[in-house]
Image 1: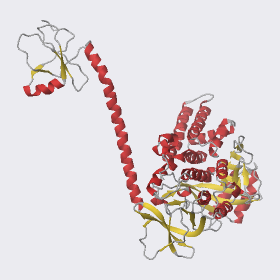
Image 2: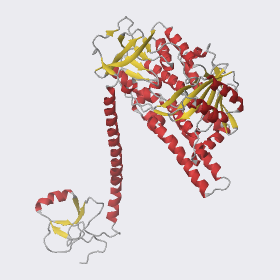
Image 3: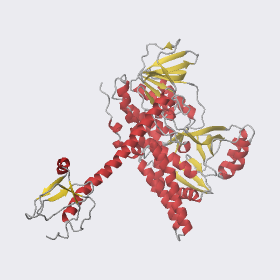
Image 4: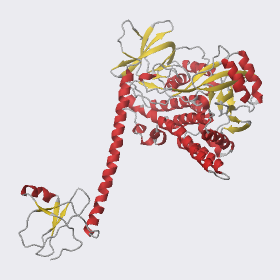
Length: 607
């Protein structure tokens, strides 16, 4: 009998009897169509092939196996059906492999972070009671929370927790009025948080000035950007002031509560016992070394913190320095507005800090500054900076330089990368910093305090440090909308506003100025983000790339050329290289998908 054309041609080999049972488990037999045919064998191969065999013979049936070296006719209907059945398994195996790869990568990354955490934990920690001759403080005060530092974050936090009935012990290195050249501008979003905390009267009686928006200057052109305050009470606006006066007012208000104790002393280390922070070791103003204990220690000791290394992975970057001056009896071109001059090589800021004083901050890229002592700084300011200022500010600027009161300060940025530690928490500049160009630091700090207050409110007992630490992990996620929006905007705007010889960066800078000058949503949207009134990271990304696309459109209209198309492509690349690393450092998942983070749903520990 002739074999049909659509059947599989295969070689047949005798099969040893001891393999027969194993073979039968991997195949099944179809009934023969006629007595002269052997049964049809369907063999389940590793590859998606369907093998059939028909043999016409009168010889006794033998155990057979079909060789996989064969050819299959394209018209075999059983083969097509079996292939379709196997496709889902192949795709499933592929996606499972990819998922496994990412899971393995995440586990290895977590292991590396844990190793770094263990490595750094020893730095700045002292085992409780290990030092001979130390005095343990026991004055019957019964502290619930120790706060290290009484700056903006520490003072506001002390008042907030004290008002909620917590017994708070604040330890500050220097309780005299600080004199700083930053931390002088509070955005409207920060002022709303100040109202929420009951501290709005701290901007009164310090000659604070209302700030209603910004004015941008570039190459002789200017545009005014007002805060979108139409939906708020008439008192809501930004505030600018002397940083020291503002801090002293908050310290006074915190100290007025009977359950808040403000003490001057220098905290030298955290006290650890079995992996839990139990308190701090500090030196008093008189030089006596003491230990203070509390269920929760909150470190707010500022940008120069010497305690954060044991509580986070600090990646501090210093992109530039500010050179500060005070201009006296100077009238700004736009009253009650901050002024940003897009100068070469980097921006210059002006804003009022009292009714008679205007703060000037000249940004100098890098960490190396011209020397003040030998006159290099004076020469730099007069010859390089002054010619780029608006005429209304030139004389007052030169007069301030001649007075010789030139101050400098490095501009630090540091993404939040905490080690969740039982018994301790980081806040303020000790925890998270961004470039001060946008004046968002105090807004982030006050917003963090509101989040922490709401988390601690349902807790009457803070003594279970491990459960409390797991619960407070949600703090790092809940703070993200406000913090990541302001942090990302500050870093991105600084890079866009800096001058560059690169043509694509020049176009991006020009496009940003023109985009903001369009008015309407093109100015109100970015200003709402900058002011803390619209803490939506996605809105920030949309506006940032809208600027980039606007820049590309300017290049391609009315007649595109190959050179302009190339610059446009590079402009999109530059925009991506600016914003994506900042977003990555902030955390993509926490920034855009916080509800997918398990810590987002942490419930208060059981009493």
